[in-house]
Length: 210
Image (cartoon, rainbow, N blue to C red):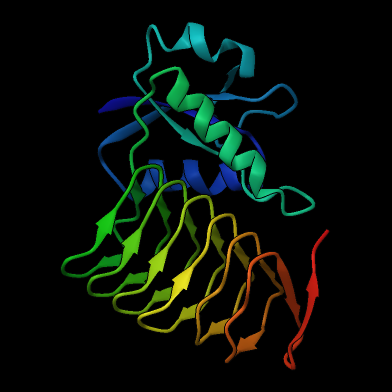
């Protein structure tokens, strides 16, 4: 198995390491980079961000273990991802062996696909995307980089989800969503959502973010 470093030791790191330990056979987690966290599922903390350059000499692969943060800060995921590229880490896609990837699906790098999720025919995912448990990404739908799709979300076929967009658990999204949007859990959205908007409850309301 190939050694892999996990960058970020919060709650999302728990999901990443659990998948590595139980739902794939290619990578072995050997350590976590985080200045404040504790070991996760017996995987030790072996450094902090400033150690990434040094650790690259002995570890070839790395993956983002940071999720959305307390304020849904997807810019932090983007910054960490770009740091790994700068230090020339290889960033694989981590796909649960209990997920379903259908024909003609195209993936970038650094994507995390959890158990029970379906990437339907001709789906396109760019880079550094999180797909939670039991998500359905409809056929020919595209998701841009650094976005997070919560558990049990249903995305209609043929739509586009923008960069750095968060969609909360149990949402149903029928039309395209722009960049840097935040959609609260449980929303049913039948309207196109423009860049930099927040959507909450089932009406839905839209509030332009500052």
